[in-house]
Length: 182
Image (cartoon, rainbow, N blue to C red):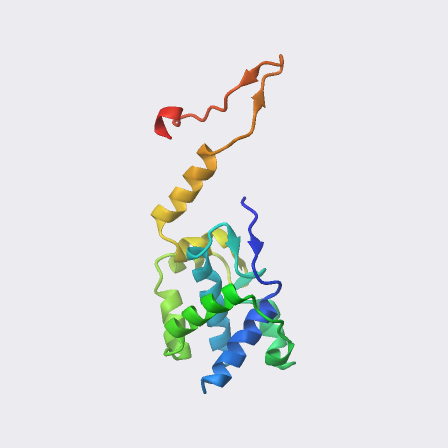
């Protein structure tokens, strides 16, 4: 399993940014709309950088779609717009781009975008309340060919040295792959 480090420290920072952006654009960000936007910006970020994730998060399958549990529980209790930390400029530019893509949609339309994805059927095979794996989220947003390019380069481009038990230097060998295939 690949460990992807987050670009933003918490999901609260992204939720805060989305709420403030919605307010400044005159758009109401309801509880459900925030959840859908969080899922969409999280998943879409893998198209920008497949080696890291936008923010540390666990999305859970619910009857209304994907939920980020921390944001779900805090939404009604505190003003999320007031507690967010500043977002790095590069990430804010990404968020503005994604906001521009989705700001025109109402809540039900955002849900439709999510559930009409072919991978959503695979996600629904899991019970309500279960975690939506990062791999399924990536599969939902990133093309198969882009995923394979990254996986193949991670396998083939390995600069580690290998040694046999007798102390002789060895070369890494993967069945089906050879130096000719590089």
